[in-house]
Length: 298
Image 1 (cartoon, one colour):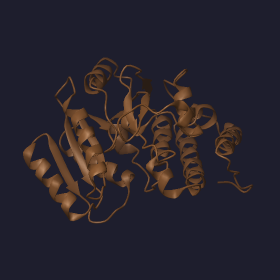
Image 2: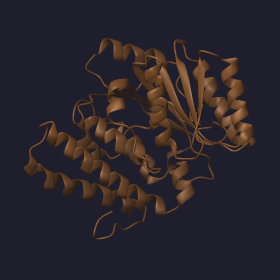
Image 3: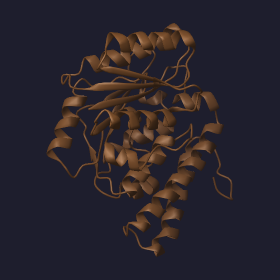
C-alpha cells in the first residue's frame, strides 16, 4: 500500500514540525507494510535537501520526487499516483503533509479492500487539531467544516454517492482520510486546481462507478492552526476562496453528471433537476459563510 503526499514548505520550524508529526504517524502504523511517495512542489533548496536525506535514510520505504515549479497539491498527487503504479501499487492512501493518520489506518484499510472487492473508496472521519496537536472545539470551526462533521451522523455509502455529495451532504471525505483503488485513481485524476480539487475528484470517482465505504474506527487528525479559519487554501485566499470553490465544485458536478449519463446510471431528463438541487445546496453553504452566489452561476 502506498501513501501519496504532496509537499511544499518553507524552511520554518513550525511546518517542519507538522511534517515530522505526519511522518511519525506513518511509522506508528500497526501494519508496517507501506511505502510513501512524497512529491515536493518546488520547495526551497534547503527543504529539498532535507527530503533527499530522508529518502536516503529510508531507502525502499520513502520515495521523493521533485517538481521544478509549484503547481499545487492536485498535480502532485497525480504524479505520485502514477509513480505508485510503476512501483506496483494497488491501493493509494492520500495523506497531506500536516495531518496525522490513525495508527490502524493501513491495517484497517487493507482489511476492507481485501475482504470487500466491491469497495473502491474508503473514507474515515477526522478530528480537528490545532498547531499544538490539541483538539479544536466545534464552536471554533467554520460552517463548512462543521457541515462535514455533521454528515458523519449518516455518511453516504455505496454507489452513486456523487448525487448525495452534490445535493445533500456536500463535501464528505477529507483527503488525508481517503484511500482508493489505483485503477480508479488513474482513470479520474485530480484537476489542475488549487481549491476544492479533492471534492471535484470524489464526485467523479463516484460517478465513474466507485463504491464508497465509510470506516469510523480510523479518524485522521486534521490540522487547522488556531490563527486560520479553515484549510490552508481558505486562509490564503480569504473570502475569495468560496467563490473559487463554487466554480470548481460546479464543474466537478457537471462532469460527474456527464460521466454518470455516459455509464447509463442516470437518465438525461434528471440532469436539470440535479443541477437545480446542486445549486440550492451550494447557495446554502455560501449563505452560511455570508457569501451570495452571483445570479449567473458560480
